[in-house]
Length: 223
Image: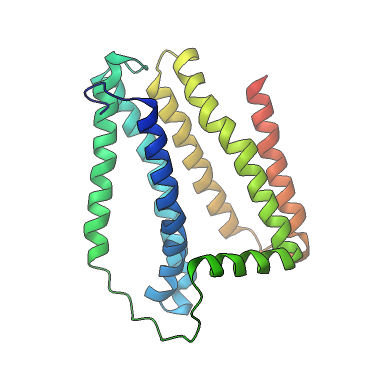
């Protein structure tokens, strides 16, 4: 659709809904699959490798996409950059195809039979009740929801516009910005592994401090 310059808003809305529905199933399945594939004493290492790989992809992927758009197009929005944007989407689709092939070789153990016959809606309701009745989890839930709504939204919408209108590099600048996000995530993961484990009683204060730093950074970006 992008290559033929035949994109309409209803198509984007439809794809966004499909992506949201897919993510609702993908992320819980991804999180629950790792403990089934590795032994419990290797679980921490496996989680570290998985998250480290994701951060490396966040570091390299946006820059590669920015280079494709800059080389094959003009690096900015508009019909002149459609070939580069289409190439970036095509490469991304190819990575999903590779992931699909690799997942076909993953053999998960057969789940033990359970007497619990809850359907999906009942399981969601049970999970929400559990979170609501646990004060720390409830507070964490609201913090994550607030960050997602007030930070991710403005960042995901505002930064592409900023890169396209304020920087001559256009898509390459946006890719570099996203790559620095991945670099920061890698650095944070490395620091978390080197620093002593914080006291559980101070986790709430630490979480609020980190969220405050994110808010201050976003406010400075808007000045």
